[in-house]
Length: 172
Image (cartoon, rainbow, N blue to C red; front, side, top):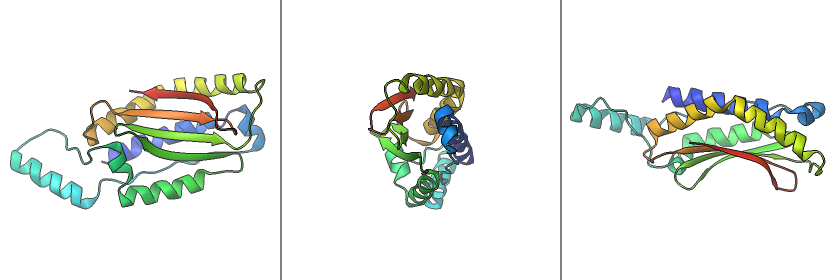
């Protein structure tokens, strides 16, 4: 479970760097990392007991869906604290499940950038998302190890101040 925490932490740090595009650095905004809790002790103990009884060496899946994982009280409290910490004067952040199989990092600029500014901002964000693709693939792999959903996904969305999507990328 520590591995998923580390990978998710790295993913958010990379997304934070992507969020620090030229427009953001002019305003001095930065994004801190978010941490995710490990599986609840009860789930870990129950899973350990069932794998010992079965004599299995396969990985244990603690949660049925991404949504179930995110709704765990421990995880929810940590995410809420991290979202609050990562909300700045120029950007807000939310982390949520979309359906049962997708973890979403949703960043929204508070300023609405004009149609002349959006292409350069999109290009910068797309470049950062491409450079960090392997990190997000690692998050997908970790989710696959701990969530009982086939083919979990991670989506990163950047929104303009008017809520329109500047860019998004889904990693499978």
